[in-house]
Length: 233
Image (cartoon, rainbow, N blue to C red; front, side, top):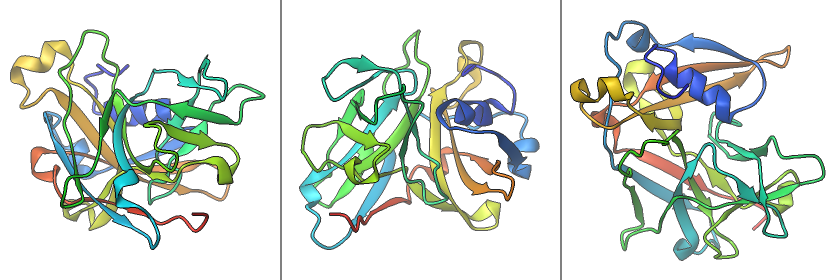
């Protein structure tokens, strides 16, 4: 699925890590594109913290969309991270088995802030079984290097997908939801090793979600921000 050459490759990936039924409104920039932008990164992110939060506990991570999390006993368990719960990109636990309300996700790459407070997230070399990633920034309250998400809001660590303004999309702010490898047959013509997509999500009155999607190009690797402001901390 992640190697699809269709212009709907990014929306298909989003449905895989999100939930519910989705209706898609694809940007003209995507509809008109003959080739999908690609990049090798890195993404540069500025984290903005609320009062009382320790900057040294901010983390960014690439999470394998097909990877297992861990339950509270440390056992592997199937669950997913939804990074588009709202337009702001707050992460949420979804698809956890019955009886499991808290899951710890361990990233394949963990990034701590630089001295200036910025987060620079490199993309790894593509491997044969690479299915793609979600990039999440979170406040690692227990300093264990894992992102803990729960169906009980008070048990979740505060986490968001990075977001930025896309001027070509009417100045909308979109959250980075998916990063996935360029199809092997397209590698020679591609500018980078990965595709990436950002989106907004709106809930309709009948409970469906409408997404507005945008490819990420090399010129859009900077300017990403995350606001970690959690009233429960």
